[in-house]
Length: 144
Image 1 (cartoon, helix red, strand yellow):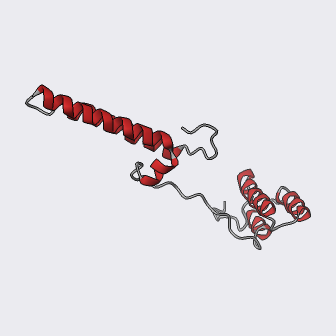
Image 2 (cartoon, rainbow, N blue to C red; image 1 turned 180 degrees about the vertical axis):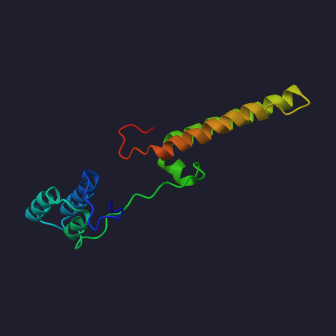
Image 3 (spheres, rainbow, N blue to C red; image 1 turned 45 degrees about the vertical axis):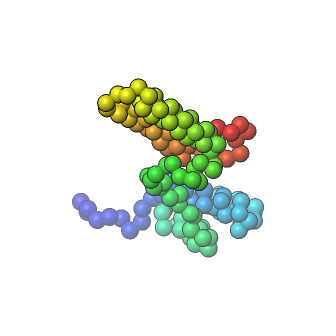
């Protein structure tokens, strides 16, 4: 029995779909005519080997891969500008924090008890900003 890797590997459906998506994207960008797209797509689904798939997209620019989002500080000025609901949430947190601190000073408690509710208010604001960062809705009919 020969354990060598074959010189040619058979193409999977996933390989064909990736190449087909690249061809369709090139057609929608105007890089290929409709006839070229049809010819290349019919060839994609007839090809059996992976090395033959590369010839169909050799004259096209490589598809841009989506970059993974970097986890970072979600509460930025850009996020506040983009999402009006975050500005409202920040305002509510600020007002409640001021009211809690005023209540603490008037009450005369020895320890700073507003730290706990202010912590949870801050956590809710960061979570809200994080959710907005992962679910952008451009052109939403209602500001969220």
